[in-house]
Length: 114
Image (cartoon, rainbow, N blue to C red; front, top):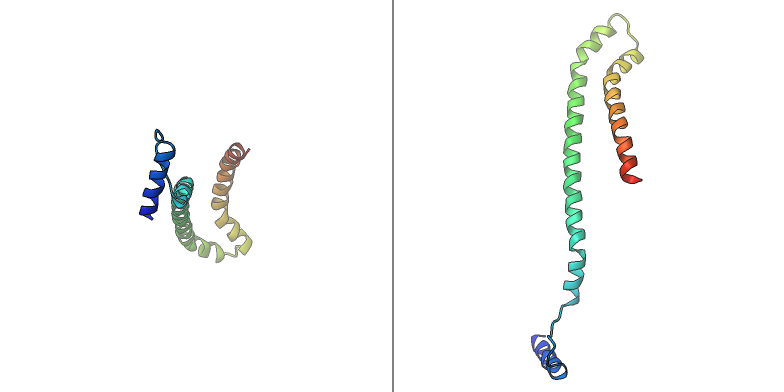
């Protein structure tokens, strides 16, 4: 293949002596076109991994919070609190955080995706 390139270069110099013989292989050209996409994919994968890690920490924290409430649940259950009341008591703090996150994220999503 190298000999063919040398022959083509010699023929090019005969036809156009002042020109510069420059060549590129097609796979190298395609690779250069997709280089930015590969970098973007790596960045998105990194961001997804960080998001997964942060959400795992939040889920772990929620599990710890619920476990700490176990004693409070048992104390309220003895006098006869209903399951609905106990479920509402447990989910109230979590729902407040979800609503705050929704109020922050909704306008941002509207701005960035509009």
